[in-house]
Length: 191
Image (cartoon, rainbow, N blue to C red; front, side, top):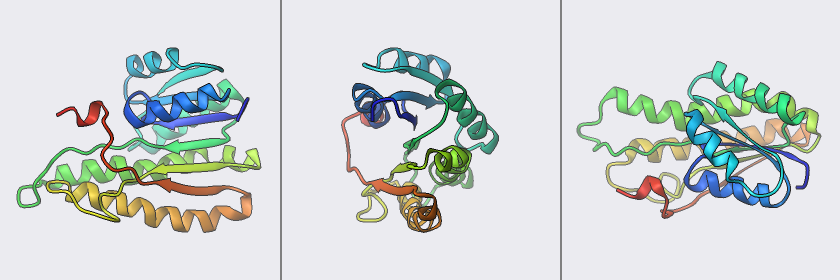
């Protein structure tokens, strides 16, 4: 991993920061992407090892994802690994969930995954060894959790995307995989 370029969306806290830290300790150049510059800069400055930068992004916006990928390419010369980790999990009981609450979760968790992969695709192809790792969840594809039906649906959708993207991108020597954590003690679960 030494010298390779890694982009971690949702990388300023929790699981994403853990992922970024492991890559940085292995000598990778790591870009930490999240919604606010203060969070990304703080996370990047605290990483061990190689070169690290913070990148501000709204993964639900394809143009923002394109800008994120361009920033990483400018800084590191390419992208070898994309960890599409950005995700949200606000509670919303099914009986009272609003269309806006549903859309917000699907926009970040599903569309954000697709948009991040699309934005990084030219660089992943150019790498000749591109790797995509999605952070899905056991909630949705394996189990359920009260008040997270929209989240569960989004995480199951990521796995459907993963399977087809893996087939489409295999001819370019790009692998697409997912990790499915359960509850991890992070800032997001503090409540």
